[in-house]
Length: 67
Image 1 (cartoon, one colour):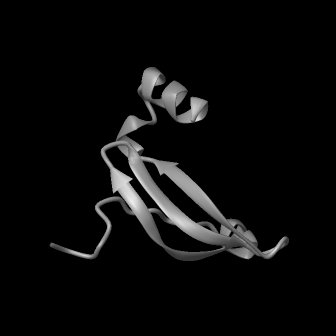
Image 2 (cartoon, rainbow, N blue to C red; image 1 turned 135 degrees about the vertical axis):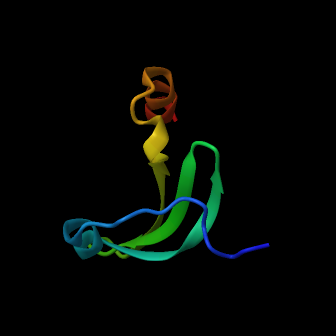
């Protein structure tokens, strides 16, 4: 079992200015969830990213936004 996530996220410099990624909390067919620190407030948050292959699927995007 590999510890490397299946999904790769390329974080932008702007994102990394605002958040410090701590670890992967979970991942599945629809994407990946990271634990991060929101630097401006010093709080721990969970950030979910939708898989690249689902961006064109309207239903998948709707479900993602509904969460």
